[in-house]
Image (cartoon, rainbow, N blue to C red):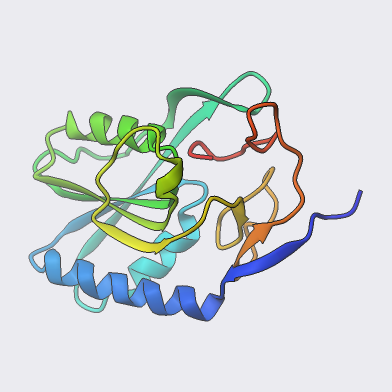
Length: 192
């Protein structure tokens, strides 16, 4: 079987520029520090790494979580489950959730409720990509890299069945099998 075709939606240069701009915005808003950045694995790991390196003066701490909404056959069930929790308490801390993509909002809503109950001083969201037309659950996003159309994207950490994360550009996957609901048949990220 040959690999599905891709086309570039956002180039590596566009992504790099926007991540630097987001870093400046975040630094201005959190000048006091420290700021806990919580990466939602696996898709956001590249965005998180680039964002952290783009900060020039902000004191940041990094944490990682993993969330799944798989059903029994790797299709999204709509039910969210925490599979990896934080290693530290965030009570009284400034916290920024770092997402690769916000789609339905179901997983992010779950995560905001979960972390909000831990009484951080502040809690906000930064996402590289936002697909607002797919939103099922409303969520507030403070920092957005790019709003994108309702197309299935891969690259820069985003995958399809664990492939394509290594692409430097964000690309549209042109030919993928879909389930009866119209969603790709094999989700491997919780939001997707």
